[in-house]
Amino acid sequence: MNRREFLGVAALPLLQGVGHTRAAFGLDGRLLIPVDLVLDWDGIFSRPRLVNRGKEPVRVKEVIVARKALSVPPTLPATALYGEGFQMLSQTAGTLGAPADLSQYTDAKHYRIPARGPTRAYYGLLTLTPPGEETSLLAFTSCHRFSGRFEIDDQHTVSAIVDTEGLELRPDESWPLEELMRVSGHDRSRLLGDLAARLTTNHPPLKTAAPPAGWCSWYCFGPRVTAQQVLDNLDTIAKSFPALKYVQIDDGYQSAMGDWLETGTAFGGNVRSVLAEIKRRGFEPAIWVAPFVAEEQSRLFKQHPGWFMKDERGAPLRSDRVTFGGWRRGPWYSLDGTHPEVQQHFERLFRTMREEWGCTYFKLDANFWGAMHGGRLHDPRATRIEAYRRGMQAIGRGAGSAFILGCNHPIWPSLGLIHGSRSSNDIKRSWDRVASTGRQNLHRNWQNGRLWWNDPDAVCVAGELTDSEARFHATVIFASGGMVLSGDDLTAIPPERAALLRKLLPPTSAAAEFEDATQRVGVVRHPGGGASICLFNWEDSPAALAVKLPRAGSLTDYWTGETLGRREGTITIEMAPRSSRLLRLS
Image 1: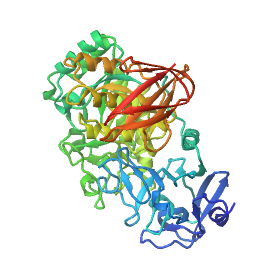
Image 2: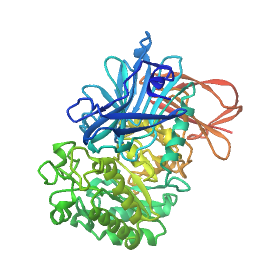
Image 3: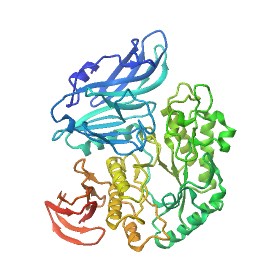
Image 4: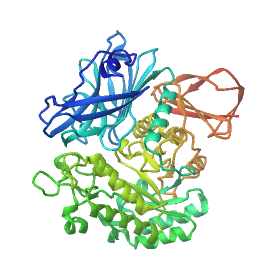
């Protein structure tokens, strides 16, 4: 199928129009005439290639592999939209007429990732659902070398773009780009399932039997955590919460960002002795590492400045010159994953922590900086995606069988490299953050158990939240089906909130599927039979939710034990403002 046939005849139902066969652009933004784009279609998948048929090398900034004009019916502004971000903290929902950032940490404004003009960019995945019509799904189903994105301009034209980063395409050279998928249908959940299946074909996932459960020090103690605080919580876990298998020291133990094998004096004890005690008590030592970044005062940066991404003068590139500089002890510098010595460093670091320190779980944070834009790499023919993936592969070799969690990471470039993926912003003990992270997590439910285990961030049910808000937060965690890590100081958790935490253990492994984008009614189908109905009223006013039960059965409120009797068909549940219900159907 040639390009004109794809753009005209076999387009998505929403899309119309035709385009040109040459769609590669140079650094000055001009079309590169001797460069041809070849689209090989196999059903709903395209495997584009870029070929330089000229006699001179050319530098290619980006390639438009598909461009389509949306039809403009009256309902176009109301078309529901969802787009993934390049990095974990960026997602877009809402409608074409009113797109909504799900987090304040956007690719464009916070991370300053360049795109084409003032248009919004969606990375990896874009879905469009007109009112009452089919969902159209566009996705890049691989991310081996290049980042793929979608943009919709003010003329309602959708472009699928591969970022080739200004690399040189030599005469007669051919680049395989990233695979593109386009499909439509009324069952959005099924479309996302099909996407997950294709992503795992191109990037076989790392497998573990079940999502981890554990405890995380950050959300009660932050970077000022001490060895004694960890040990005190270990005592409580061993006595009262033995299902929290992984005990995670989350930041604060290191002497500097980058010097991960050196314990800082503020920690009040040697980190290795704390990890050894966790192991001795029968739990799994887990630790936080930000492997791709280092601060200027670190021993790593001072001794190995040549290991870092470079600026145009060949000096280590300060991250705040091109992106966000880092949330603590910045501005950070980014290790270059294409450098052989950096790869050896990663292997040594994680092998030491795995074999000598006994760590069986690594929370990798600030991974975005491993794919930071704007720098020069040791391998001049590599992309920033390759830099990140080579670095992560080295980390995996060192970590061995340990569980690897990606956090603040580039989403699509992490495919096949991590066991778990953070699916939301950091939780806080406030309604606004419970609601915002809840929506972020539930939008990514389709990934859980397919690409990796989702990490909806820590369970923080103690503190300032009302009982209703705490149950809402716990119901989101249950509906996500992913990892469960407590973020409370368990030495001081009230009994009723401790009971709420226990009901989340062990993780179910099954995520809820929602009937529509409002995320009000979701169904968890449990592997052993039975189902759970997750109900959410996100609003500040009461609501009555109509629930179509998947089958007849007895309903019980999971949190309170209240019996609602035997029900079938469609029932109506009255919901208070900012409330949730979790009903077990048996």
